[in-house]
Structure formats: structure tokens, C-alpha cells
Image (tube, rainbow, N blue to C red):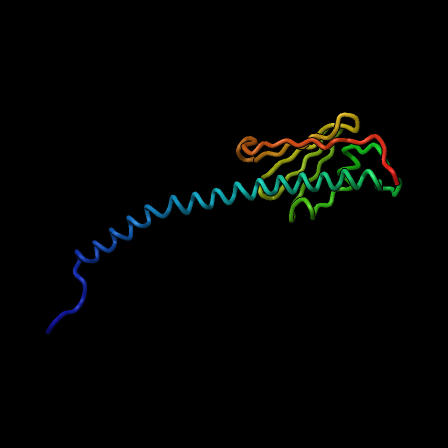
Length: 147
């Protein structure tokens, strides 16, 4: 009777070859995943910039009470911000006297500071790595709005 099959040495050779391929491919795949996460966080920060600029512009033309205002504050920006334009979900807005904080669900934290005379500064960073992706943008303020 003739036995057909692989010997133990042949099976071990195949396992070793597969292990070498896995050792080579794993760091490459992990690098791609990490790059994708970093890019997603940067895009989230850009969405926050866009959302705050939108809220700032909206607050210039229409206040919360419907009146036209020319001196937007952090309070009016926080009330006019369109959350859907900033991030998909789980936005936490906290407004204090000097700072508006926006936290996205993928770990990006943005703070908006300033007032209507010096402009509003937006800083965004990665909450988990001590502001690794720190960026800053300033929204210039205007002195009057024409209807």
C-alpha cells in the first residue's frame, strides 16, 4: 500500500515560509493603518475649522434671536455651529468665558479662543498624544456687516 501525503519536513518548511511572509507583511499593514488614522484625525481638524468658520459667518448675519449682529462671540459661535458640518457624531461643546472646546469622536480636540476685536484662534490636536497634530488657524473679524 502506497501512502500519499506530506512529510513532516515538508510541512515545517511551508510553515516557516508562511511565518516569514507574515513577519514581513505585518509591519507594512500596521503602518498603513496608522497612516490612515493620522489622516482621519487631520481631516477631522479641518472639518472643525470649516464648521467654526461656518458658525462664525452665520453668526455675523443672523444671531440666535434672529437679529443681525456684527460682533460675534464664542457664545454666538457655539450656538450657531452646525455639528453635522464638523463631525459625524459625539461632539461635546463646552463654552466658558474664554474658550470653546470641541471634541470629536476620533480623539481630536479643538479650542477656539479670542474675541471680536482680535479674531478667533482655532487650535486642534490629538487628545491621546499631547497635541501631536497641533495646528492653528485664525478667523479674522470684521467691523461691520452689510445686509
